[in-house]
Length: 405
Image (tube, rainbow, N blue to C red; front, top):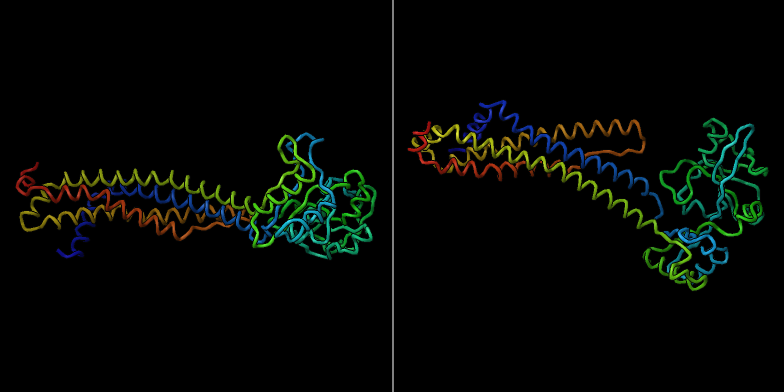
């Protein structure tokens, strides 16, 4: 029997029991669409995380006091440690200190509490903050202890209630009764390290002059390193040098260090695991759908026993019978898979559209591999779960089959 004829006969068999075939398809449709939706959402989340960090300089280590220790036992970083670490460590590109406090900032009759950071001229390079208007703090500003500030857009929004940020270059804001000249405005960056978009940057020398008690010691360092050096090497070197200089507390370091690269990898791994778990849970419904296909095909073989006997009596081979019922099983599973793919892609696209309208950072999308894999799996389900009913049908004795009532 030609394959085209076998396919026609199988389609006729499936179509002859429309409602039962639909119920069988339903299990496959739900399973496939669930898998696609779960994987699409997980993939979208991973793209968001990747987008948050794609422009971020990840070869850096964050170094600060060990806040897990009592206050008096914590280590205090100093500006001397900048040169100490920079000159003693192998693979280090730079060690950049940051001072930080929270203060009221005033403009006109408006007031807002924001972070004030004392920084060097290299702060933007390692924090990934973006300068939108004006200029950044320079070495000359630091040497001269100038009262100049680079202000974040979000801070300006609270102070002026306007989005005409460029017009505020050259105007003044007041911090702790000190007037600062606005020389630059920060844009909104998707990913930042240590300092948020809601911040005011001033020269660290000015910071130390105004807040003498808080400004004696940097709050944290960002240590950048070259591509030939690993994050763990930098952490081990810094820990050894600082422990040698400041000692330890019951074997614990007085300082805490964390790498940006390891945190990014950890987040990506968590998202991957969550996507796999959710996809696996959804895939259970595919197994249930496959069992449904086998059940329906066994019922079909039972109902069409006389038909099988008649076809064998007029010359149909066991292979013809087996291929017919196997094709019916594949059509049911594969058809359900195709419909499930359409439903899953449509729902995931709708969810992505809604999320992108609500959150501009959302980057949804259905990976091609999950579509291809879903169809391949459903076809395999049709073959695996349809084989036994098809084999059973092909082994029926024609005489016994014709006598079956």
